[in-house]
Image (cartoon, rainbow, N blue to C red):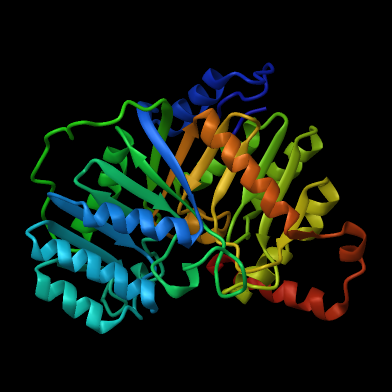
Length: 398
């Protein structure tokens, strides 16, 4: 069997062979892994935001911050204040905001940042003559401090992420603090969007950070720019599905796979791969994504894919676990938008301690889910089936 890129992924078994997964990812995506990285997983806003703010408050030279979502709430004010304070102290602060996702950012935060000397750019303003770009956003979430510490994952700056997923007002999220060569990949993703936004300036300090920890994580950084209904995120997700041999576990905030990806998931389940997918249940900020995703259930459940709806609150984390070896993290969801419309960043990790921690998180999250019962789903009513038809029509936007 060959994957979408034509690579032979089934000539022989490679169970437990990290070199195989690394080779498959590098040769298909054309991006090498780097060694010497550290990874710290941060679960939920009560751990994510303190780590990010601490890094900002300790910045000496530069802060680069890119986000899709900057909404309202106490954390929005507090985070903006921390950035402005460092700008007042002479730290170069660059803030890049998606013009659609961050449109409700408090004006007083914007004014505070500008008054402090921070540079602010808006990515692809919605009122523009290049109307075809309006639907293609930057969905990346990146924070860089002194070009030595990086953060990425799924968190937005808003009240919805503040807390520990204890109730529907506190979303479930995972973010990551990183050091080492991986930071250069994050910086490249920031700069590409920064320059497109019209800033026109590149990094003016190319020196290597001093005192870097010598970590043991292998990391591949994939940044994608999507404007023609396809991106390397789709290649990554389809490749991982193709080379899975034992199990594939997916956690995603929006589950709307396209037909080629559905076919690969069904084929993997057919060859005995245990596939489990977690996504939001009763609490979601996108009803369109929910009904569009439900249109895929028939095929997936019939093939033996196991589907789980997260119950306590909105599940927004983006984690993919391949067999017992590779974790894929970042900003990308398992949906049409991430695979064909938005600028995203994805990191493939080969790091057993992080993999084990994420595997434990997956088990905990699954325990808080309700499984989609194949028999019950087959017996669903006419109204539900009608909604799925509508979802099918809307799925390219979900």
